[in-house]
Length: 324
Image 1: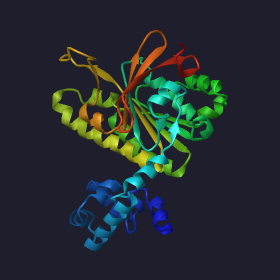
Image 2: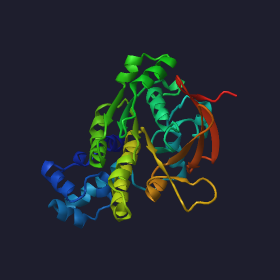
Image 3: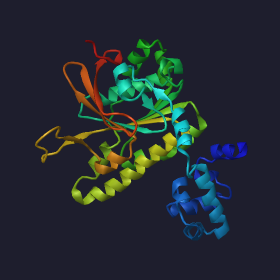
């Protein structure tokens, strides 16, 4: 049993599967079998033909992929035990943490959506600092990877937030790796490369994409490009979810909103990305402006959390509870 557990830990990518050399890997990638999930759901005949390998080898590779992903029936008790090991990152606001069930979760994707200036990026900066805190203070003693698609990452905010928490600002900056994504293809390529980076550094416990939809929205405008955009975005989001699940880390994405002209009652703003972004993230939170430095966070969707709203503040030193 211990050997099986160790084998699951070892197999993280397609190239880790036994019998998959560089030549076979190239053929699998060209045929679209670039992830363990794709191989796990493939038929042995299709995989054998695509990679030019014997049918028995294809069957073994598929079984290894399914074992690595732990694709099997599980008892509700096993699922409960897995959920018990989920970790949380504090947002520095008790009210916001309460809405999130204790903080930003590992092993899932959390989406923060709202209009420009609502505070999404501020929360992302804060948790990039907070993930470095020890567990007893609401962190994971880890590092953060920050994918910036809009040029909004600011080291000045990191310094201010770190100092307020008693962290060395220079060390806090060293524990956050940021990269500017230029377009959708670059953004997807960055996430594909993250797997190797995370596998080499087990202290990486948070991945932020701010914002996940801006390049997709700009490059795939018009109804005629909608299907292509959604397919590409869906694949990208599932890449991020897979990172969260395999490496037990938190993934946070921000998203823009747009107005729906056909809405006459209620909030006319909806998140960009359509149904693709309605279904992939495990937790969806809307951030709205309020008076002054106050913001309202509303739980829109989470299978294990109730709906609700809380108020928090964005201060000079970061995210905090709103003063009465």
